[in-house]
Length: 388
Image 1 (cartoon, rainbow, N blue to C red):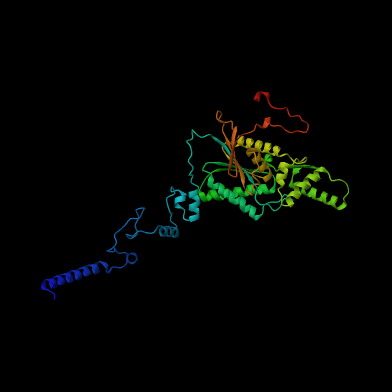
Image 2 (image 1 turned 180 degrees about the vertical axis):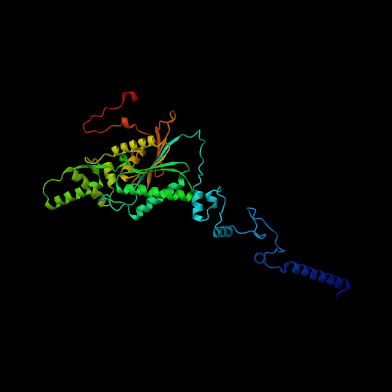
C-alpha cells in the first residue's frame, strides 16, 4: 500500500524531474544559426548580428565587426595591389612565400657573439672554392649544366650569410671551369641579394695568377696539368705503337698521374705523396696561395674573398694547415680561412683560422719572404737573421 505521504513525495519528485528536464531542454536546444553561418550572413547583409559583437584582430583591425583571417587579408591585399606591410617591417616577417620566409628567418644571426671589444678583429674571410662539375679534364673545358647550377646555388647560399654593407671580392684561376664557377657564384649572389633585400659592394670576377692549378713542366714549357694532356697523349700513343726508344721521364710521370685517375684512383693523393720531378711541388702551391691571400688582404681590407680554383691546390693547402689529408673536396666545396688581427698589432694579420670539413685549426700566416724558394740554383739566402 502507498500512503498519502508517499504519494505526495512521489508527486513532488515528478514535478522536480519535469522542471529539470525543461531546464536541460532550454539549455541544449539551439535556435540561432551556428557561428560560421551567422558571420557569413552578417558579411552578406552588412548588418550587425545579435550574437556577434565587434572584435579586434591582433593588429587592431576589424571587418564588419568580425576578425579576418591573416591569409585572407594578405590575399585581398595582393589582389588589389596594396602593400602587405610597412616597408620598415623585416622581410622575414612580411614574406608571403613560405620558403622565402623560412630562408630569410634562417638568415637572422642566432649566434651568441662576444662584445666587440672582447673579440679579435677579422681582417678577411677567405673562401677557397673548388670549381663546379666540369665537362672533362682532358682539355680546358667549362662547366656542365649541373656544375653551373652548383655554383649558382653556392652564390645564393652565400647571400644568406652576408650582412648589409659588406664587400665581396671575386677572383679565380685562369681556366675556363674556374672562371665560369666564379661567374655563376657572382650571379647567384646577386639573385639572393635581391630576394633578401641586402646591399653590399661587389668586386667583379677577375683572374689571379697565384690561385692557378698546380703546374707541369712539359717540353714546351710550364703549363697546367690538363693543358699538357694532348701533348702527352699524342706522344704516348706513338711510343706504344712503334715501341721505339725509351719514354722520357716527363712522359712516364704524366702517364702515372693520368692512369691513376683512369683506374678510379686518387691522382691528387699520388701528387701529394709521390715525389715527381716534373710536377710543381705541393709546398710551392701552398706558398703562392698564401702569397695571393696576403696580397688581396692588403688590397681589400675587411672584405670577403671568394676564390674559385682547383681541388689539388685546395687540398694541399688544407693538408699544410691541418697536418693530415681530409680528402678530396667536392665540387663547390670550400676551405675557409679567417685572417685575424695580431693580439698586439691590429694590422698584422699574423694569425688565421683554417676550417675544412668540421676541423678548425689556428695557424700562423707564413711570412712569404722567409719561405724557401726551392730553386735549382740553390740561391736562397736563408732566414733573415734580424727576424730570428
